[in-house]
Amino acid sequence: MKKILIAILVLIALLAIVSLLAPKEFNVEREIILNCPKDQVFERVRSLKSQEKWSVWGDLDPNAVYTYTGVDGTIGAVQSWVGNKDVGKGEQEIISITEGERVEFQIRFLEPWESTGDLYITTEALGESETLVKWGMKGEMPIPMNLFMLFSSMDKTLGNDLETGLQNLKMILEGV
Image 1: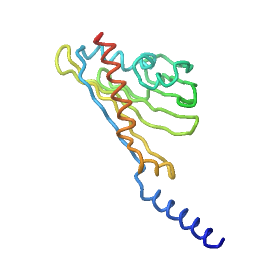
Image 2 (image 1 turned 45 degrees about the vertical axis):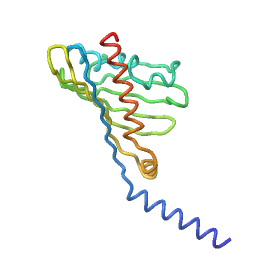
Image 3 (image 1 turned 60 degrees about the vertical axis):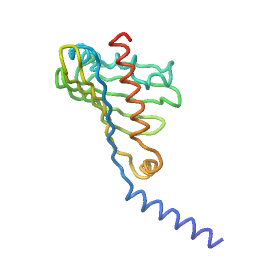
């Protein structure tokens, strides 16, 4: 019994040390080129209501309920959602806009766990009817949740979601 207790304590101490040394921050970004004018793309990506149509996360629960406060596409606008266990409960707020170039959002997950992250979308004209769109998220995983980053790649998991969302945006805007 004493050996089992010592083994458990050693395991707990080892996990605590590893979680202190494991990465806590993540930064994931994906990009796509759209055959659309920059102003048309920017108007779409700044709209929280528009994101329901192209963001991959809306597909996780088609019955999720979304509510909006503030003026969509402006600083302070908030999209809140309540959904199934895959979607949970949370909100996303527009916190900064550089007109025609960049929109920054803070995303707050409330259930099934509490967490925050910073999302951004940038647009850059490559020509009159060609736009480079970058969509990214950065955040921090608290201890001991950061241990999961040792076993799963945030870049791959979150990156796949961002890529799919950008492909959805391309299909909507280009009518493909």
